[in-house]
Length: 137
Image (cartoon, rainbow, N blue to C red):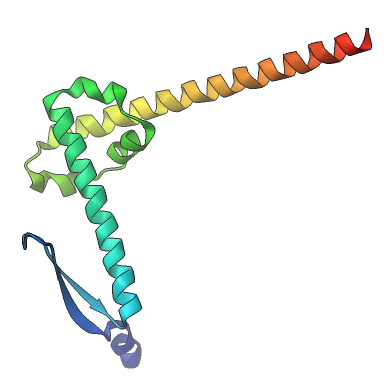
């Protein structure tokens, strides 16, 4: 068991610093490919957090914009963890309201899309039935 613990934590420590030297992240990696994989994962999370931050700032200025957001943005907001964003000077109750509202809008958009898809199927089957009746006559 002792060997497993050593294998699990073996690697070298690395520090990632952004170009403005504001963000510093430590990574332990066992190889260059392991380091690259972990760094890419952190980069993706940072991009996602930055997008989320920008969205919330826009909504703070005009909450009505939530009605015009696309599915990806609504999904990002409805999946957010408000506890992680309170540190970014956002009010917790505001974050909770955005999370709940975005989830509701996302649900409504999906329901509307499902209804449209059903209408398209119905329309396509009606056209097929009419064209097969005409060809028989």
